[in-house]
Amino acid sequence: MKIKLHTQIVIALILGAVFGSIFHINQNEIEVKSADGKFNIENWSEISFLKQDSILKSFDSNSQLAVIKYFNSIKDKKLRQNLKVEIKYADREKESIGNIKEIGKVSTIGVMLKPIGDIFIRLLTMIAVPLVLSSLIVGAASLSDLKHIAKIGGKTIGFYAMTAVIAISIGLACANIIQPGKFMPEETKERLLETYQDDAMSKIEQNISMDIVDFLVNIVPKNPFNAIADGNFLQIVFFSILTGIFLSQINDDKSKTVINFFDGVSNAMILLVEKIMYVAPIAVFTLISATVAEFGFSILQTLLLYSLTVIIGLTILTFVEYPLMLKLFTKMNVFKFFKTQRQVIAVAFSTSSSAATLPVTMDICEKKLGVPNKIASFVLPLGTTINMDGTALYQAVAAMFIAQVYGFDLNLTQQLTIVLTAALAAIGTAPVPGIGLIMLIIVLKSVGVPEEGIALIIGVDRLLDMCRTVPNVIADSLACVVIASSEGELAPMNMDG
Image (cartoon, rainbow, N blue to C red):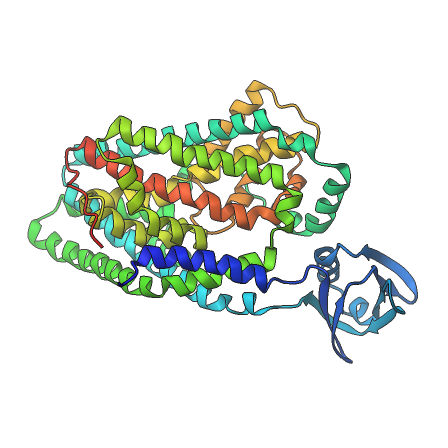
């Protein structure tokens, strides 16, 4: 019996996690490349950086990342050449290595296979922009009536805004009840800040800010081709909807050729997705394997309560709020809905990207959930751009966690500020991995919490990014079903295949 694709992906995900656990990167081993060769250093008791026999910095046995980051922070080539690393061991004599060129982790096969998964993500991301552009143009053109477009657009944005506010409120409730930041030992806080401070500063230096007027102005592209080249989804959405609207307003003979062209592009992209998905199990295996091998579960133990708070919030969002919404606004069977989402969930979890998952979501919504193309092609690209429920919830929990660690007691007004800012930040969040962490800086600024605090959570961001992408994409499918149902255009579900 042939195993169904979504089952293959789930099996690959589990096997990838096991494989990554077996072939994990040793957290007590580093690779030092110098003019004299390559050295694998492990089980040290202390590592010191020396310049002319004077110690610049010393690290203990649990500081693999801190050692690597410290060396990488030294940009002066002359200083690097004059540096010497002294390694002390508990069971043998110390050794020194000079003229160092590079210090890094020792790769394992669990990480070496990652390029296969990276190609898979790039293929899906490659499809996302032409799919959004063509689908929205066709979708907006097929709605034809401007009042109809405004009604569908209003319903979509209203639904996304409502789910985002509820998601943020769930995150704040979980953070207030569990209070994960109040249980972090001072020693753990200092270690995390030291290890990840350079990463935190590089994100803070990007100087992200949220000005509503500028945000609205920047939605309008100066050059739509630049927006397409840069993958600026908000600008692409704006341009595509306007183009579709006014294509529907001109002579049929002139517009039909253009609409048919973009319809052909959209159909070609969907077909391409179906072919790419044949390699999804292999790609998912390599991506999960690499993530588990590189990050392991040790960092999760350090930030266990924070991670659990985020995951509990995301679980409530996905399996309590969304089923209630489905029951409230449609007659669709909740179990069957989630059954169709298995493939979408697996791709979202392994890629951490709503944009990369969009082609799969669109395929499932149209072929399994019974959403007509004209609604799916309008609602889903818009959702991929402005609907980030999981990210918004995570930002609320992260802001509260960092505030608690630093001893800030945020009052109701400040927490309402988090709701507003996180909702706006979610709209402006690009649908790519890791961007939520940068947008978190806006949320922290809004309530006066030190932005450097993101160093506390960077270590688990990749793993939580995978988790929060799942509700992001499920909410898009949910919105599709709700809007189609409200318009009386939801066809019966197709559970075959």
